[in-house]
Amino acid sequence: MKKLSFVDKGFLLSETREMPMHVGGVSLYTLPPGADEKEFLHGLADNMRNAKTMLPPFGDRLKTGRLGLAGNTYWEPDPALDLDYHIRHSALPAPGRYRELFTLVSRLHGTLLERSRPLWEMHLIEGLPKRQFAVYTKTHHAAVDGARSIHVSRVMLSADPGHVLEESPLSLHLWEQYKAGLKMGKRPEHTTSELRSVADMFKLSIDSGAHVFNAVKTFAESLTGNGRGMALPHLQVPRSALNTQIDGARRFVAQSWPFARISAVAKSFGGTFNDAVLAMCSGALRTYLQVHAELPEAPLKAMVPVSLRQPGDVDSGNAVAAISADLATNIDDPSERFAKIKTSMQASKDFYAEMTPREIELFFLIVQSPAAILAPLGMMSKLPPYNVAISNVPGIRETMYWNGARMDGSYPLSIVTDGLAMNITLVTYAENVDFGIIACRRSLPHVQRMIDYMEESLQELEDAAGIKVKPAKKRAAGGARKPASRAKATASAKPAAAASGTAKTRTKAKAKAKAKAKAKAKAKAAAKPKAKAKAKAKAKTRAKAKTKVKSGSSS
Image (cartoon, rainbow, N blue to C red; front, side, top):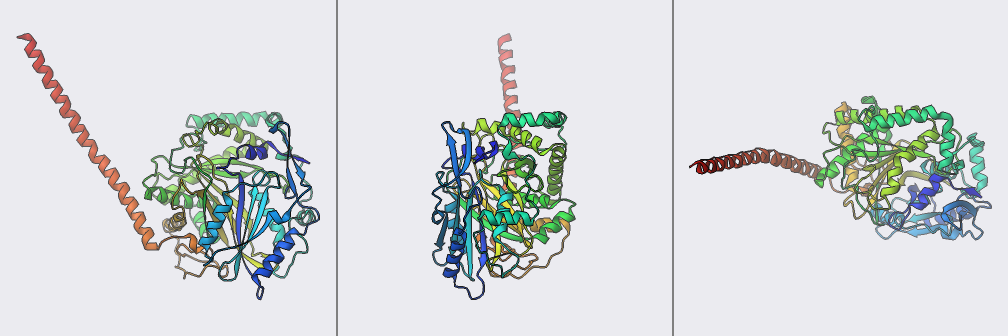
Protein backbone atom coordinates (compact mmCIF):
# COMPACT_ATOMS: atom_id res chain seq x y z
CA MET A 1 0.00 0.00 0.00
CA LYS A 2 1.17 3.51 -0.82
CA LYS A 3 0.41 6.41 1.48
CA LEU A 4 -1.08 9.58 0.00
CA SER A 5 0.94 12.76 0.45
CA PHE A 6 -0.50 15.84 2.11
CA VAL A 7 -0.91 17.49 -1.30
CA ASP A 8 -2.64 14.43 -2.81
CA LYS A 9 -5.05 14.19 0.11
CA GLY A 10 -5.84 17.89 -0.18
CA PHE A 11 -7.57 17.26 -3.53
CA LEU A 12 -9.85 14.69 -1.88
CA LEU A 13 -10.64 16.91 1.10
CA SER A 14 -11.59 19.89 -1.06
CA GLU A 15 -13.82 17.94 -3.48
CA THR A 16 -17.58 18.60 -3.54
CA ARG A 17 -20.41 17.78 -5.96
CA GLU A 18 -20.08 21.24 -7.48
CA MET A 19 -16.28 21.06 -7.51
CA PRO A 20 -14.95 17.72 -8.83
CA MET A 21 -11.19 17.34 -8.43
CA HIS A 22 -10.27 15.27 -11.47
CA VAL A 23 -8.18 16.19 -14.50
CA GLY A 24 -8.66 14.81 -17.97
CA GLY A 25 -8.01 15.08 -21.65
CA VAL A 26 -9.55 14.57 -25.08
CA SER A 27 -7.39 13.04 -27.79
CA LEU A 28 -8.40 12.90 -31.45
CA TYR A 29 -7.27 10.02 -33.66
CA THR A 30 -7.59 9.11 -37.33
CA LEU A 31 -8.34 5.45 -38.06
CA PRO A 32 -5.69 3.40 -39.89
CA PRO A 33 -6.37 2.96 -43.63
CA GLY A 34 -9.02 0.30 -44.24
CA ALA A 35 -9.91 -0.16 -40.56
CA ASP A 36 -13.57 -0.55 -39.56
CA GLU A 37 -14.39 1.97 -36.82
CA LYS A 38 -16.51 -0.26 -34.58
CA GLU A 39 -14.15 -3.24 -34.82
CA PHE A 40 -11.07 -1.09 -34.28
CA LEU A 41 -12.51 0.60 -31.16
CA HIS A 42 -13.64 -2.74 -29.74
CA GLY A 43 -10.09 -3.97 -30.28
CA LEU A 44 -8.65 -0.97 -28.42
CA ALA A 45 -11.05 -1.55 -25.52
CA ASP A 46 -10.06 -5.23 -25.32
CA ASN A 47 -6.38 -4.24 -25.43
CA MET A 48 -6.87 -1.77 -22.55
CA ARG A 49 -8.41 -4.53 -20.41
CA ASN A 50 -5.55 -6.98 -21.10
CA ALA A 51 -3.38 -6.43 -18.00
CA LYS A 52 -2.26 -9.04 -15.47
CA THR A 53 -1.05 -6.41 -13.01
CA MET A 54 -2.32 -2.84 -13.27
CA LEU A 55 -0.08 0.19 -13.03
CA PRO A 56 -0.72 1.96 -9.68
CA PRO A 57 -2.97 3.76 -8.97
CA PHE A 58 -5.15 2.57 -11.90
CA GLY A 59 -5.78 -0.73 -10.16
CA ASP A 60 -5.95 0.79 -6.67
CA ARG A 61 -8.78 2.15 -4.57
CA LEU A 62 -8.68 4.44 -1.55
CA LYS A 63 -8.34 2.97 1.93
CA THR A 64 -8.99 5.10 5.00
CA GLY A 65 -9.04 4.38 8.73
CA ARG A 66 -11.62 5.25 11.39
CA LEU A 67 -10.81 8.95 11.02
CA GLY A 68 -11.53 8.89 7.29
CA LEU A 69 -9.53 11.37 5.23
CA ALA A 70 -8.55 13.17 8.43
CA GLY A 71 -6.32 10.21 9.27
CA ASN A 72 -3.88 8.18 7.20
CA THR A 73 -5.05 7.42 3.65
CA TYR A 74 -3.56 4.78 1.35
CA TRP A 75 -3.86 3.32 -2.12
CA GLU A 76 -4.60 -0.42 -1.96
CA PRO A 77 -5.22 -2.91 -4.81
CA ASP A 78 -8.92 -3.26 -5.65
CA PRO A 79 -9.79 -6.97 -5.27
CA ALA A 80 -12.92 -6.52 -7.40
CA LEU A 81 -11.43 -4.42 -10.20
CA ASP A 82 -13.99 -4.13 -13.02
CA LEU A 83 -12.31 -2.79 -16.16
CA ASP A 84 -15.61 -2.88 -18.08
CA TYR A 85 -16.79 -0.16 -15.69
CA HIS A 86 -13.71 1.99 -16.23
CA ILE A 87 -13.34 1.56 -20.01
CA ARG A 88 -16.46 2.61 -21.90
CA HIS A 89 -17.52 2.83 -25.54
CA SER A 90 -19.80 5.70 -26.63
CA ALA A 91 -21.15 7.14 -29.88
CA LEU A 92 -21.95 10.75 -30.73
CA PRO A 93 -25.42 11.73 -31.93
CA ALA A 94 -25.74 12.89 -35.55
CA PRO A 95 -24.31 14.92 -37.19
CA GLY A 96 -21.23 14.06 -35.08
CA ARG A 97 -19.52 17.44 -35.11
CA TYR A 98 -16.94 18.68 -32.62
CA ARG A 99 -19.79 20.58 -31.01
CA GLU A 100 -21.47 17.29 -30.06
CA LEU A 101 -18.13 15.93 -28.85
CA PHE A 102 -17.50 18.94 -26.62
CA THR A 103 -21.06 18.78 -25.27
CA LEU A 104 -20.54 15.13 -24.28
CA VAL A 105 -17.11 15.81 -22.77
CA SER A 106 -18.44 18.82 -20.83
CA ARG A 107 -21.12 16.62 -19.29
CA LEU A 108 -18.72 13.77 -18.48
CA HIS A 109 -16.19 16.12 -16.90
CA GLY A 110 -18.83 17.56 -14.56
CA THR A 111 -19.60 14.25 -12.83
CA LEU A 112 -17.76 12.84 -9.81
CA LEU A 113 -15.63 9.69 -9.89
CA GLU A 114 -16.84 6.80 -7.73
CA ARG A 115 -14.60 6.68 -4.64
CA SER A 116 -15.22 3.02 -3.90
CA ARG A 117 -13.39 2.17 -7.14
CA PRO A 118 -10.06 3.21 -8.69
CA LEU A 119 -10.40 6.91 -9.50
CA TRP A 120 -10.32 6.97 -13.32
CA GLU A 121 -12.43 6.47 -16.45
CA MET A 122 -11.74 6.14 -20.18
CA HIS A 123 -14.36 6.75 -22.90
CA LEU A 124 -13.77 5.63 -26.51
CA ILE A 125 -16.03 7.85 -28.64
CA GLU A 126 -17.04 7.14 -32.24
CA GLY A 127 -19.15 9.14 -34.68
CA LEU A 128 -16.80 11.95 -35.75
CA PRO A 129 -16.37 12.84 -39.46
CA LYS A 130 -13.26 12.22 -41.58
CA ARG A 131 -12.68 8.75 -40.02
CA GLN A 132 -11.78 10.28 -36.67
CA PHE A 133 -12.58 9.00 -33.20
CA ALA A 134 -11.95 10.53 -29.78
CA VAL A 135 -10.73 9.27 -26.42
CA TYR A 136 -11.75 11.09 -23.25
CA THR A 137 -10.01 10.17 -19.99
CA LYS A 138 -10.39 11.52 -16.49
CA THR A 139 -8.31 10.71 -13.42
CA HIS A 140 -8.52 12.15 -9.93
CA HIS A 141 -5.90 14.80 -9.19
CA ALA A 142 -5.08 12.88 -6.00
CA ALA A 143 -3.68 10.14 -8.25
CA VAL A 144 -1.83 12.06 -10.98
CA ASP A 145 -0.72 15.51 -12.03
CA GLY A 146 -0.36 16.78 -15.60
CA ALA A 147 3.25 15.69 -15.98
CA ARG A 148 2.56 12.10 -14.96
CA SER A 149 -0.50 11.96 -17.22
CA ILE A 150 1.77 12.69 -20.18
CA HIS A 151 4.10 9.84 -19.16
CA VAL A 152 1.18 7.41 -18.77
CA SER A 153 -0.22 8.32 -22.19
CA ARG A 154 3.28 7.98 -23.68
CA VAL A 155 3.25 4.26 -22.84
CA MET A 156 0.31 3.62 -25.19
CA LEU A 157 1.75 5.69 -28.04
CA SER A 158 4.49 4.99 -30.56
CA ALA A 159 6.18 6.99 -33.32
CA ASP A 160 5.92 3.83 -35.45
CA PRO A 161 2.48 3.53 -37.13
CA GLY A 162 3.03 -0.21 -37.46
CA HIS A 163 3.56 -0.79 -33.73
CA VAL A 164 0.76 -2.74 -32.01
CA LEU A 165 0.56 -3.26 -28.23
CA GLU A 166 0.21 -6.84 -27.06
CA GLU A 167 -0.94 -5.90 -23.56
CA SER A 168 -2.68 -3.00 -21.87
CA PRO A 169 -0.82 0.34 -21.76
CA LEU A 170 -1.99 0.46 -18.13
CA SER A 171 -0.10 -2.72 -17.24
CA LEU A 172 2.70 -2.48 -14.69
CA HIS A 173 4.94 -4.53 -16.99
CA LEU A 174 4.78 -1.98 -19.84
CA TRP A 175 5.27 0.89 -17.38
CA GLU A 176 8.49 -0.66 -16.07
CA GLN A 177 9.67 -1.18 -19.65
CA TYR A 178 8.91 2.47 -20.43
CA LYS A 179 10.89 3.70 -17.40
CA ALA A 180 13.80 1.43 -18.26
CA GLY A 181 13.80 2.79 -21.81
CA LEU A 182 14.05 6.32 -20.47
CA LYS A 183 16.70 5.22 -17.96
CA MET A 184 14.39 6.35 -15.18
CA GLY A 185 14.10 3.12 -13.25
CA LYS A 186 15.50 4.51 -10.01
CA ARG A 187 13.25 6.75 -7.96
CA PRO A 188 14.65 9.94 -6.43
CA GLU A 189 15.93 9.70 -2.91
CA HIS A 190 13.14 11.93 -1.62
CA THR A 191 9.81 12.76 -3.25
CA THR A 192 6.74 14.64 -2.13
CA SER A 193 4.91 11.33 -1.66
CA GLU A 194 7.25 10.58 1.23
CA LEU A 195 6.32 13.71 3.13
CA ARG A 196 3.95 12.40 5.76
CA SER A 197 2.56 15.68 7.03
CA VAL A 198 3.08 19.41 7.11
CA ALA A 199 5.22 18.92 10.22
CA ASP A 200 7.55 16.67 8.23
CA MET A 201 7.84 19.33 5.56
CA PHE A 202 8.91 21.91 8.13
CA LYS A 203 11.39 19.40 9.56
CA LEU A 204 12.94 18.74 6.15
CA SER A 205 13.32 22.47 5.59
CA ILE A 206 15.26 23.14 8.81
CA ASP A 207 18.51 22.13 7.10
CA SER A 208 18.02 25.01 4.69
CA GLY A 209 16.91 27.64 7.17
CA ALA A 210 18.73 30.44 5.37
CA HIS A 211 16.67 29.80 2.22
CA VAL A 212 13.42 29.81 4.21
CA PHE A 213 14.47 33.08 5.83
CA ASN A 214 15.13 34.55 2.38
CA ALA A 215 11.74 33.31 1.19
CA VAL A 216 9.93 34.94 4.11
CA LYS A 217 11.98 38.11 3.62
CA THR A 218 11.07 38.31 -0.08
CA PHE A 219 7.45 37.56 0.79
CA ALA A 220 7.48 40.46 3.27
CA GLU A 221 9.07 42.71 0.64
CA SER A 222 6.31 41.80 -1.79
CA LEU A 223 3.70 42.69 0.81
CA THR A 224 5.20 46.16 1.12
CA GLY A 225 5.52 46.65 -2.64
CA ASN A 226 9.26 45.94 -2.84
CA GLY A 227 9.04 42.42 -4.22
CA ARG A 228 10.86 43.11 -7.51
CA GLY A 229 7.61 42.90 -9.49
CA MET A 230 6.51 39.56 -8.03
CA ALA A 231 2.73 39.08 -7.75
CA LEU A 232 1.23 37.24 -4.78
CA PRO A 233 -2.06 35.33 -4.32
CA HIS A 234 -4.98 37.22 -2.72
CA LEU A 235 -3.06 40.53 -2.86
CA GLN A 236 -4.18 43.13 -5.39
CA VAL A 237 -6.31 40.51 -7.15
CA PRO A 238 -9.36 42.30 -8.57
CA ARG A 239 -12.82 40.78 -8.36
CA SER A 240 -14.13 39.88 -11.79
CA ALA A 241 -16.69 37.74 -13.61
CA LEU A 242 -14.08 34.97 -13.54
CA ASN A 243 -14.25 34.80 -9.75
CA THR A 244 -17.72 33.59 -8.82
CA GLN A 245 -19.41 30.71 -7.03
CA ILE A 246 -19.67 27.71 -9.36
CA ASP A 247 -22.01 24.77 -9.83
CA GLY A 248 -21.27 21.33 -11.25
CA ALA A 249 -22.05 22.04 -14.92
CA ARG A 250 -19.08 22.59 -17.23
CA ARG A 251 -18.39 23.92 -20.71
CA PHE A 252 -15.30 22.77 -22.61
CA VAL A 253 -13.79 24.18 -25.81
CA ALA A 254 -10.49 23.45 -27.53
CA GLN A 255 -8.27 24.61 -30.37
CA SER A 256 -4.73 24.20 -31.71
CA TRP A 257 -2.20 26.78 -32.84
CA PRO A 258 1.16 26.20 -34.56
CA PHE A 259 4.02 26.08 -32.07
CA ALA A 260 6.11 28.17 -34.49
CA ARG A 261 3.71 31.14 -34.34
CA ILE A 262 3.78 31.43 -30.55
CA SER A 263 7.54 30.81 -30.41
CA ALA A 264 8.14 33.56 -32.97
CA VAL A 265 6.25 36.05 -30.79
CA ALA A 266 8.28 35.02 -27.73
CA LYS A 267 11.55 35.41 -29.62
CA SER A 268 10.60 38.81 -31.06
CA PHE A 269 9.84 40.24 -27.62
CA GLY A 270 12.84 38.56 -25.96
CA GLY A 271 10.65 36.45 -23.70
CA THR A 272 9.95 32.78 -23.12
CA PHE A 273 7.36 30.55 -24.75
CA ASN A 274 5.36 30.70 -21.51
CA ASP A 275 5.47 34.51 -21.57
CA ALA A 276 3.98 34.46 -25.07
CA VAL A 277 1.23 32.03 -24.01
CA LEU A 278 0.31 34.26 -21.06
CA ALA A 279 0.28 37.34 -23.31
CA MET A 280 -1.97 35.54 -25.79
CA CYS A 281 -4.38 34.51 -23.00
CA SER A 282 -4.21 37.98 -21.46
CA GLY A 283 -5.39 39.66 -24.66
CA ALA A 284 -8.21 37.13 -25.05
CA LEU A 285 -9.40 37.55 -21.44
CA ARG A 286 -9.24 41.32 -21.82
CA THR A 287 -11.53 41.20 -24.87
CA TYR A 288 -13.86 38.62 -23.30
CA LEU A 289 -14.42 40.81 -20.23
CA GLN A 290 -14.66 43.99 -22.33
CA VAL A 291 -17.44 42.46 -24.42
CA HIS A 292 -19.37 41.79 -21.21
CA ALA A 293 -18.40 45.25 -19.83
CA GLU A 294 -16.72 43.57 -16.86
CA LEU A 295 -13.01 44.30 -17.34
CA PRO A 296 -11.64 45.45 -13.95
CA GLU A 297 -9.37 48.50 -13.75
CA ALA A 298 -6.68 46.51 -11.92
CA PRO A 299 -4.78 43.82 -13.88
CA LEU A 300 -5.90 40.19 -13.69
CA LYS A 301 -3.60 37.71 -11.92
CA ALA A 302 -3.06 34.16 -13.18
CA MET A 303 -2.07 31.03 -11.32
CA VAL A 304 0.76 29.39 -13.28
CA PRO A 305 1.64 25.89 -11.96
CA VAL A 306 5.32 24.90 -11.87
CA SER A 307 6.65 21.35 -11.67
CA LEU A 308 8.73 20.31 -8.65
CA ARG A 309 9.58 16.89 -10.06
CA GLN A 310 13.16 15.81 -9.62
CA PRO A 311 14.97 14.35 -12.66
CA GLY A 312 13.87 10.75 -13.14
CA ASP A 313 10.71 10.98 -11.04
CA VAL A 314 7.75 9.59 -12.99
CA ASP A 315 6.08 7.70 -10.13
CA SER A 316 5.01 10.34 -7.60
CA GLY A 317 1.42 11.56 -7.72
CA ASN A 318 1.60 15.34 -7.46
CA ALA A 319 4.74 17.49 -7.44
CA VAL A 320 3.53 20.98 -8.19
CA ALA A 321 3.49 24.49 -6.78
CA ALA A 322 2.36 27.70 -8.46
CA ILE A 323 3.40 31.25 -9.12
CA SER A 324 1.15 34.28 -9.52
CA ALA A 325 1.59 36.14 -12.81
CA ASP A 326 0.47 39.69 -13.56
CA LEU A 327 -1.49 39.50 -16.84
CA ALA A 328 -1.40 43.29 -17.33
CA THR A 329 -4.97 43.35 -18.68
CA ASN A 330 -5.16 47.03 -17.74
CA ILE A 331 -2.67 47.82 -20.54
CA ASP A 332 -4.08 48.30 -24.03
CA ASP A 333 -0.79 48.14 -25.96
CA PRO A 334 0.20 44.46 -26.60
CA SER A 335 3.95 45.24 -26.53
CA GLU A 336 3.74 46.94 -23.14
CA ARG A 337 1.48 44.16 -21.88
CA PHE A 338 4.03 41.52 -22.92
CA ALA A 339 6.83 43.44 -21.18
CA LYS A 340 4.84 43.62 -17.94
CA ILE A 341 4.04 39.91 -18.04
CA LYS A 342 7.68 39.08 -18.73
CA THR A 343 8.83 41.19 -15.74
CA SER A 344 6.30 39.55 -13.43
CA MET A 345 7.25 36.02 -14.49
CA GLN A 346 10.98 36.73 -14.21
CA ALA A 347 10.52 38.10 -10.67
CA SER A 348 8.81 34.86 -9.59
CA LYS A 349 11.47 32.71 -11.28
CA ASP A 350 14.26 34.66 -9.56
CA PHE A 351 12.49 34.21 -6.25
CA TYR A 352 12.06 30.44 -6.63
CA ALA A 353 15.60 30.00 -8.00
CA GLU A 354 16.93 30.60 -4.49
CA MET A 355 14.89 27.72 -3.02
CA THR A 356 14.90 23.93 -3.12
CA PRO A 357 11.82 22.06 -4.41
CA ARG A 358 10.80 21.21 -0.83
CA GLU A 359 11.10 24.83 0.24
CA ILE A 360 9.04 25.95 -2.74
CA GLU A 361 6.30 23.50 -1.78
CA LEU A 362 6.44 24.72 1.82
CA PHE A 363 6.26 28.35 0.74
CA PHE A 364 3.39 27.53 -1.63
CA LEU A 365 1.42 25.97 1.24
CA ILE A 366 2.02 29.04 3.42
CA VAL A 367 0.89 31.41 0.67
CA GLN A 368 -2.18 29.26 -0.06
CA SER A 369 -3.19 28.92 3.60
CA PRO A 370 -5.83 31.71 3.44
CA ALA A 371 -7.77 29.54 0.98
CA ALA A 372 -8.18 26.87 3.67
CA ILE A 373 -10.11 29.43 5.73
CA LEU A 374 -11.94 31.22 2.92
CA ALA A 375 -13.18 28.13 1.04
CA PRO A 376 -15.34 26.63 3.85
CA LEU A 377 -16.81 30.09 4.47
CA GLY A 378 -17.72 30.52 0.80
CA MET A 379 -15.51 33.61 0.56
CA MET A 380 -13.23 32.56 -2.30
CA SER A 381 -15.20 34.61 -4.82
CA LYS A 382 -14.94 37.71 -2.61
CA LEU A 383 -11.21 37.39 -1.96
CA PRO A 384 -9.85 35.23 -4.82
CA PRO A 385 -6.22 34.07 -4.73
CA TYR A 386 -6.05 34.44 -8.54
CA ASN A 387 -8.42 35.36 -11.36
CA VAL A 388 -7.66 32.46 -13.70
CA ALA A 389 -5.44 29.37 -13.94
CA ILE A 390 -3.15 29.00 -16.98
CA SER A 391 -1.04 25.85 -17.16
CA ASN A 392 1.51 24.71 -19.75
CA VAL A 393 2.26 20.97 -19.76
CA PRO A 394 5.22 19.93 -21.97
CA GLY A 395 4.08 17.17 -24.28
CA ILE A 396 5.40 15.06 -27.15
CA ARG A 397 7.09 16.80 -30.08
CA GLU A 398 6.55 14.14 -32.75
CA THR A 399 3.49 12.59 -34.40
CA MET A 400 2.36 9.52 -32.45
CA TYR A 401 0.17 6.47 -33.13
CA TRP A 402 -1.95 4.16 -31.00
CA ASN A 403 -2.01 0.71 -32.59
CA GLY A 404 -1.79 2.40 -36.01
CA ALA A 405 -4.31 5.20 -35.39
CA ARG A 406 -2.67 8.61 -35.83
CA MET A 407 -3.11 11.01 -32.93
CA ASP A 408 -4.23 14.36 -34.36
CA GLY A 409 -4.41 16.36 -31.14
CA SER A 410 -4.51 16.15 -27.36
CA TYR A 411 -6.58 18.68 -25.41
CA PRO A 412 -6.33 18.90 -21.62
CA LEU A 413 -9.21 19.45 -19.19
CA SER A 414 -8.38 20.71 -15.73
CA ILE A 415 -10.25 21.89 -12.63
CA VAL A 416 -12.37 24.94 -11.84
CA THR A 417 -13.17 25.94 -8.27
CA ASP A 418 -15.19 28.48 -6.32
CA GLY A 419 -13.61 31.83 -7.09
CA LEU A 420 -11.74 30.40 -10.10
CA ALA A 421 -14.38 29.65 -12.73
CA MET A 422 -12.06 29.26 -15.75
CA ASN A 423 -8.99 27.12 -16.35
CA ILE A 424 -6.81 27.29 -19.48
CA THR A 425 -4.40 24.38 -19.99
CA LEU A 426 -2.21 23.67 -22.99
CA VAL A 427 -0.07 20.77 -24.16
CA THR A 428 2.58 20.87 -26.87
CA TYR A 429 2.16 18.06 -29.39
CA ALA A 430 4.09 17.56 -32.63
CA GLU A 431 4.18 20.97 -34.36
CA ASN A 432 1.16 22.39 -32.54
CA VAL A 433 0.08 23.74 -29.19
CA ASP A 434 -3.24 22.23 -28.09
CA PHE A 435 -5.34 24.45 -25.80
CA GLY A 436 -8.20 23.21 -23.64
CA ILE A 437 -10.47 25.69 -21.83
CA ILE A 438 -12.83 24.48 -19.11
CA ALA A 439 -15.26 26.82 -17.36
CA CYS A 440 -18.34 26.85 -15.18
CA ARG A 441 -21.26 26.77 -17.61
CA ARG A 442 -23.50 29.08 -15.57
CA SER A 443 -20.91 31.62 -14.40
CA LEU A 444 -19.21 32.25 -17.75
CA PRO A 445 -21.56 32.36 -20.76
CA HIS A 446 -20.27 32.09 -24.34
CA VAL A 447 -16.85 30.82 -23.23
CA GLN A 448 -16.45 29.35 -26.72
CA ARG A 449 -15.72 32.88 -27.94
CA MET A 450 -12.43 32.73 -26.06
CA ILE A 451 -11.10 30.68 -29.00
CA ASP A 452 -11.76 33.58 -31.38
CA TYR A 453 -10.32 36.13 -28.97
CA MET A 454 -7.13 34.09 -28.53
CA GLU A 455 -6.55 34.09 -32.28
CA GLU A 456 -7.13 37.86 -32.38
CA SER A 457 -4.76 38.32 -29.45
CA LEU A 458 -2.03 36.29 -31.17
CA GLN A 459 -2.46 38.36 -34.33
CA GLU A 460 -2.15 41.59 -32.31
CA LEU A 461 1.10 40.34 -30.80
CA GLU A 462 2.42 39.36 -34.23
CA ASP A 463 1.55 42.80 -35.61
CA ALA A 464 3.18 44.54 -32.64
CA ALA A 465 6.31 42.41 -33.06
CA GLY A 466 6.47 43.16 -36.78
CA ILE A 467 6.07 39.50 -37.70
CA LYS A 468 4.90 39.18 -41.29
CA VAL A 469 2.72 36.16 -41.91
CA LYS A 470 0.79 34.97 -44.93
CA PRO A 471 -2.89 34.13 -44.45
CA ALA A 472 -3.36 30.37 -44.69
CA LYS A 473 -6.20 28.67 -46.47
CA LYS A 474 -8.72 27.20 -44.06
CA ARG A 475 -8.69 23.43 -43.98
CA ALA A 476 -11.43 21.10 -42.92
CA ALA A 477 -11.17 19.78 -39.40
CA GLY A 478 -9.51 16.41 -39.26
CA GLY A 479 -6.94 17.01 -41.97
CA ALA A 480 -3.29 16.10 -41.68
CA ARG A 481 -1.25 17.98 -39.10
CA LYS A 482 0.71 20.49 -41.15
CA PRO A 483 2.14 23.69 -39.73
CA ALA A 484 -0.29 26.47 -40.56
CA SER A 485 0.76 30.08 -40.85
CA ARG A 486 -1.85 32.67 -39.91
CA ALA A 487 -5.27 31.07 -40.03
CA LYS A 488 -8.42 32.56 -38.56
CA ALA A 489 -9.96 30.58 -35.68
CA THR A 490 -9.23 27.20 -37.31
CA ALA A 491 -5.52 27.67 -36.72
CA SER A 492 -4.91 23.97 -37.23
CA ALA A 493 -6.62 20.80 -38.31
CA LYS A 494 -8.55 20.52 -35.13
CA PRO A 495 -11.87 21.52 -33.55
CA ALA A 496 -13.13 24.25 -35.80
CA ALA A 497 -16.51 23.84 -34.13
CA ALA A 498 -15.06 25.32 -30.97
CA ALA A 499 -14.95 28.67 -32.69
CA SER A 500 -18.17 30.61 -33.07
CA GLY A 501 -19.03 33.37 -35.48
CA THR A 502 -17.13 34.85 -38.39
CA ALA A 503 -14.16 37.20 -38.30
CA LYS A 504 -16.56 40.03 -39.13
CA THR A 505 -18.75 39.22 -36.13
CA ARG A 506 -15.73 39.00 -33.84
CA THR A 507 -14.37 42.36 -35.04
CA LYS A 508 -17.81 43.93 -34.62
CA ALA A 509 -18.15 42.55 -31.08
CA LYS A 510 -14.69 43.77 -30.17
CA ALA A 511 -15.35 47.22 -31.65
CA LYS A 512 -18.66 47.36 -29.79
CA ALA A 513 -16.93 46.48 -26.52
CA LYS A 514 -14.28 49.14 -27.04
CA ALA A 515 -16.93 51.71 -27.99
CA LYS A 516 -18.91 50.81 -24.88
CA ALA A 517 -15.84 51.17 -22.67
CA LYS A 518 -14.95 54.47 -24.38
CA ALA A 519 -18.49 55.82 -23.93
CA LYS A 520 -18.41 54.81 -20.28
CA ALA A 521 -15.10 56.62 -19.76
CA LYS A 522 -16.41 59.67 -21.66
CA ALA A 523 -19.57 59.78 -19.56
CA LYS A 524 -17.47 59.49 -16.43
CA ALA A 525 -15.21 62.33 -17.57
CA ALA A 526 -18.19 64.50 -18.53
CA ALA A 527 -19.82 63.87 -15.17
CA LYS A 528 -16.82 65.22 -13.27
CA PRO A 529 -17.08 68.94 -14.33
CA LYS A 530 -20.87 68.82 -13.93
CA ALA A 531 -20.52 67.45 -10.43
CA LYS A 532 -17.85 70.04 -9.71
CA ALA A 533 -20.06 72.91 -10.99
CA LYS A 534 -23.00 71.58 -9.01
CA ALA A 535 -20.93 71.41 -5.84
CA LYS A 536 -19.63 74.95 -6.47
CA ALA A 537 -23.16 76.31 -6.98
CA LYS A 538 -24.33 74.55 -3.84
CA ALA A 539 -21.46 76.04 -1.84
CA LYS A 540 -22.26 79.50 -3.23
CA THR A 541 -25.93 79.17 -2.22
CA ARG A 542 -24.92 78.11 1.27
CA ALA A 543 -22.52 81.06 1.58
CA LYS A 544 -25.24 83.47 0.40
CA ALA A 545 -27.74 82.07 2.89
CA LYS A 546 -25.18 82.36 5.66
CA THR A 547 -24.58 86.04 4.80
CA LYS A 548 -28.31 86.78 4.95
CA VAL A 549 -28.66 85.12 8.34
CA LYS A 550 -25.70 87.08 9.65
CA SER A 551 -27.06 90.46 8.43
CA GLY A 552 -30.51 89.61 9.85
CA SER A 553 -29.13 88.90 13.33
CA SER A 554 -27.32 92.26 13.54
CA SER A 555 -30.43 94.33 12.85
